[in-house]
Length: 460
Figure (cartoon, rainbow, N blue to C red):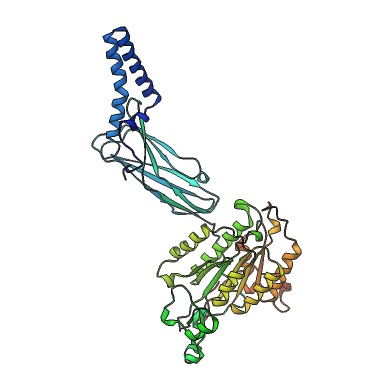
């Protein structure tokens, strides 16, 4: 798109403001020569002064007449880049006029976290020709970063005038959390047919025996069960028979007081990366995945079969959400617990910061409403750095939270700084759990996935 619009004021005044040091020197020398010729009566000096003064003005007018004859485009590879990895930005400049361009200088606006602003010099572009340049960007911090608009600096052949024009288009680079491939495991307490299919027999028994659930975004309003809505004070819908499909909820603890450290090496960034890894892993194995945070923010269940899209497209939507998630100022997990009570059946995977005894007990009570439940419990005292000068969480408090969760049926994976989410996930395998009098309680690292049979949920 050619540079035009309100960002490109026109007129001789604009051209004069774009004069370079050389152009201003020529203009000043010419005016001085004209004044001296008038005072001294020298006609030859007058002609020299007019020549010196007209040259930069003519250069500015020439640039103003050619300001709309260049178009540009930008392409990102890829549009979503994992934190710590590079993305490449390709720029294309087209000369849409019938005359060659002069010296062109390109500068793309880039946020400082992605690196310095790239600058390129194009000597000459032939009529109807184009040039392509590229540069790399990299960020260790998640987020959505605008790239552009591209600034084009036009210069005349004599270097008398330079005019800067800004294109109107810009692109967004999304830096998503790092995703680690997780091994396939079989989780303790995992059962088949999560979700609405579990109510199949009840739904066939008649209206009096219908089991309602909380309304979810996208539910058909014709399924609203008004009797249950009046009883619970919340909008409830009837469960209907659905094909066997596994459901999963990934709970991410974003409480500021529950994490420690700053920047890419903080416990919060580890938690976000672990949540992204689990969500993508479950999507690839056919689960309908819902992302939930302690603030109550819930990304509705998504799966390739649900949306009709590829797994890569659905996982991209979840990663986009995790790319911009930030620490919250909440003190507890009450909002997330309320969402789980209204519709928390299926597999629950929680990535938790430090918990007090009450919060661990409340999460333990939620275990009865889920299928399998796995918790990444972060030992935040192992992360260096202070946040708001908070003291380190005592190890005894972490031990208490772990004990309460295990007693209520959770599979607890205790994570410290430097631990791998993939290694911890392998420890959640039901074959690695200590059984009655078996193996001395030592976990197995086999991680093999049992074959799926009819009526069973897929491997987690």
